[in-house]
Structures are given as C-alpha cells and as structure tokens.
Length: 431
Ligand code: SDX
Image (cartoon, rainbow, N blue to C red; front, top):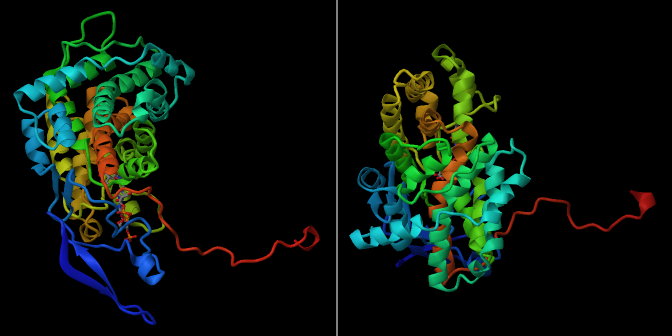
C-alpha cells in the first residue's frame, strides 16, 4: 500500500518535508499526512473533506468520473441483477458472496430474529402519532443498546456477528412499526414464510383482517432499492457512524447517530425533498422556472435529487432506479404517472442545460427513488427510513472495519481558529 514514491512539501521558511504516497487498488493515490503537524507544526485545512481520505477501506469503491460503484469489487449493476439484498448484506459483511449453504444459513438466522422485544414495541406509544418516522428511528434504534448490554463487548468477533445479524433482522420490523404507529393501525408480526423484503411489505401494508399477498414485482423492486442503498463509501452518515464508533460507543448508538445524519435534505433526506419538489413544480410547463431558480446564485433553491460530491457522471444507482421506476409503474398500471413524466422531463431539460453540464450535475440515487416508493404506497415521510433500513448494513460493516483496524484511533480533527485573540476578562463596569 505504501509506495516508494514520496510527496515533498516545500513551505517558505521551513525545511522541505517528505510524506509517503499511498497507492490504492483502485482510485486516487493518497499523500499520508498523518505526521504533518509533527513535522511542520501545521494542520491541513479541508473543510467539507473535499480532498481527504479518512480511512483505508476494502468495502466499497466509487469512481465518480466513470459512474462506477463496486461492493467488494462487484459492480452494482451485476449485484442488482443477480442477487437479493441479503446476499449483498452477506457479501458486504464477509467479503464474499454466500454459497448455497451459507445463503440458507444466513437467511434462516435473519428470518428467526426479526421480532423485537415486546417492551420495545411499547416505546412507540411515547411518540406523537405525527412524529417524523426518522425521529422515531433515532430513538428506537438507539434504545436497542438498552436491551442488548452484551453489544458493549464488541471486541469479540462472535458478538459483532450477533449484533450485525440482529440489527439487519430487526430494522425492517422497527421501520414498519414506525409506519403502523403513524397510521394508528395494529402492529403486524413478521412472517417466517416470507422473504426478507416480502416480510417487510407484509409488516408495512398487511392487516390482521386479511392475508397480505406481496406483489412479486414490487418485492423485487424494493429489494433492489435496498441493494442500491446498502453502502456508499465514506458519505456523511457513514463518516458519522465511524466517528461515533471511534470513541468506543456501542454499535446501536453509532447507527442511531448515522440515522440522524442521513435525515438531512442534502443527504438521505433528498428523496423526500425531491418528491416534495416535484409536487411543488406540479406541471411540465413550470420546469423551466425551477431550472432557472436552481441556477440563480441568489436563490437557495437546489434541484433535489441532482448533484453529488463524488459522481461527476451519472450515479449508476440513478440509472437502475429509473428502470425500476418504469417497471413498478407499469406493473401497477401507473404508466402515465404525472410525477414520473415530470421527473423524466426535468431530467431531460437539466441534462441539456449548460449550467448542469458544466457543473457535472446528474440525477443521483434520490431522484427516482421517491417516485417508486410513492407508487408502492410508502408515504413521503418514510422514504429516508427505507434508505436507513438498507444503509444500516453498510454502517455496521464500516463500523466493524473501523474497530478491527489496528491503526484505528479516536477521530479528533483540529481547526483553523479565527475567533477573538487572547484577552483578559474586563470588570463588569468596564463591559
Ligand atoms: C446522497 O455522499 C454520498 O455518497 C451520499 C449518497 C449516499 O449514498 O450516501 O450518495 C446519498 O446524499 C445523494 C445526494 C442527495 N442530495 C441531493 O440530491 C440534494 C441536492 N444536491 C446538492 O445539495 C449537492 O449536489 C450535494 C450536497 C449532493 C453535493 O454537494 P457538494 O459536493 O458540496 O457540491 P456543491 O454543493 O459545492 O455544488 C457544486 C456546484 C455549486 O455551485 P458553485 O458554488 O460551484 O457555483 O453545483 C451547484 C452548487 O451550487 N449545485 C447545484 C446542485 N447541486 C450542486 N445547483 C443546483 N441544484 C443542485 N442540486
């Protein structure tokens, strides 16, 4: 990993300093600046981490220029086509796709751990019915650590496996209960005769009054949506989970912190914001007005679902999401769905506009996901919960990679201080 190549830093008034260049398997080389302060007394300044690699990772690789996304080396397009979400969860966790026996064992472990503690179900009663489901998720997922004290002992790989399986199994139940509670409908217990994603749909839309039969096209579409959202390198919420975990906090507290970060409209909250934006635009005739607003520096409006810190080409997930969108709308007889038509036109106009072309702003994973979820019957407020359900796999695996890294330390960035110079406290009569 460390090449023989060196980077030489020449700062006026300082001796030139050399720093090792780290060579990746794919992607950008890195200058190892860990000794910068020790060697120069200076910090590197990189607000927003535009040019900073925060860790070594073997989990996910993104090539923003090529529009490429690999999970453990496998292209997202192939995984979406040939695997289900639990196969991908196994891959991200263990580094290889499961064979037939491993697949059956893993699916059975997950299937038989989907119920939550009965006292956890009572937690929901403490929230207002109209509470945002992400607020409920932050609370309930964080509270898992109150029920599983052994999660504190994550130095034991066996315990880490149990924590991973437990949270992957219980997240769909936790999310579905948040929806049922908001609707005032009875909670639905998981069904072991259903697949992971079919079971989630059963817990979301089933009632005790009749047998719920999940639509296989919808099950496959939602399962693929979970795959597309499972992990994404060192995005804001994953970095939050890593930073929280670096203090030794238990995994459930760290995942709860990740959920809080994902909630923001610039991140996972963009799918909810995007659907609201499409509904506000309302009609294709108003698209030019909103494109103009998105380009106006004095207007805070941004085209939600467009742009990405890393992808400066198409987000490969957006292409797959658009295909899923068309399939689900066709299956549900919504081919002329107004919002989908509007989204397609908005995408077409934006991608022909010089502003978006020059700034390399393309649709991201959130642009179509809201339309699909709305067509399935998932309310807008639940979109980011669906994102969190899937991303919990990536968060847990990134957290485990971090605590298993022999180099890991508590994350503690420094700053460029621009506040008041040192001064003495004046007496009250002199203030
Ligand atoms: C996710 O990091 C990840 O991997 C995240 C994610 C994941 O899987 O974890 O992929 C999930 O969060 C996807 C992104 C969802 N967010 C949105 O769709 C919200 C709208 N997008 C923007 O807020 C923005 O594009 C970001 C936040 C996604 C990226 O922001 P950056 O990298 O900080 O880029 P920027 O804001 O500096 O934009 C560069 C330029 C700016 O113009 P200038 O200041 O250079 O003149 O492009 C403009 C921006 O004003 N711009 C937009 C725009 N996005 C960027 N202008 C209009 N509409 C937009 N959507």
